[in-house]
Amino acid sequence: MIQYQGRVYRPPSEADSLILQATLGCSYNDCTFCGMYRDKPFKVRKIAELKQEIEWAASAMGDVRKVFLADGDALIAKTSYLKEVTELCYAAFPNLRRVSCYASPQALDKRTVEEMALLREAGLTQYYLGVESGHDEVLLNLKKGIDAENMIRVAKKATEAGVKLSCMILLGVGGRRLTTEHALESARVISAINPRFVSTLVVTPVEGTPLYDQAQAGAFEDMDPAELSLELRTFVAALDLDGTIFRSNHASNYLPLAGTLPRDQPRLVAELDQVIASENPRSYRPEWARGL
Ligand code: SF4
Image (tube, rainbow, N blue to C red; front, side, top):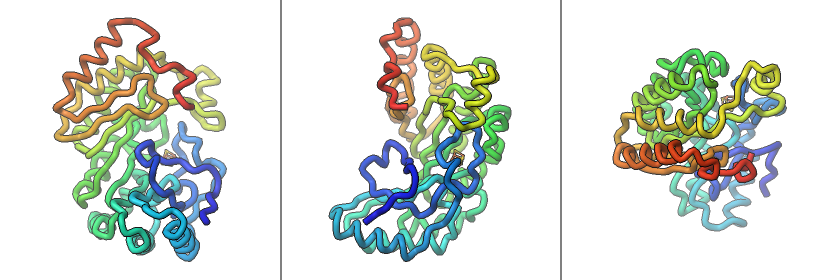
């Protein structure tokens, strides 16, 4: 059977996927807002262990259609290793449609386009990339380890390799002072990448992280749902995309929205304008339903 090690995180769209921990923790593990793997040393797991888990899943779980390779940064593992894991999955699950993983900017920088294309041909066809912001000062504050122009460069390596990218933007990370710049610069970076999917999450200072300590010290200001909606509106209105699916369905969001851009952009902006103009707190997902 599969014995998961520590807490396992996955994107909302991998809810019905088989999760395999190809790696444990995150090799970077320094982002100030991220508390997911602080207590978990980074490790690439042994192929033999994964093989056993894949064999068990093939006999016990039947029809596996999607596999998500955890934990936080599986793409940092060697290409030969990821290729073998991916091939084992496709051999074991006849109806498998895709294998995906999180990819840090550092992993995207390390992997060559040729390596990513090789993995895509083997079936590792989608990465989730936390862009978080397109604003350099915000990225620096978050200790993301990369600036906006390099974020665009490394993300484009993946799209050049034919990999589908799902990019995440963190609402509220610039605080009130940088809200407009964060929204506009994030829209600029996402537009330059033109990923297949883009989603927003609302930042929440998690205990045990530097961001939490900053919030406790009054150095990080939480924004309210109305302010975050305005930030989201600025972001969505400024996007210049070609066939990207947008979602704000992560539990942290106050407004669950979805659409394909640019087709649904006017509707999404109108929906946000309506909510902002109504000034009705009941327009927002209540705190108890945000699943944090
Ligand atoms: S790269 Fe991702 S998993 Fe790693 S610390 Fe940053 S946000 Fe967390």
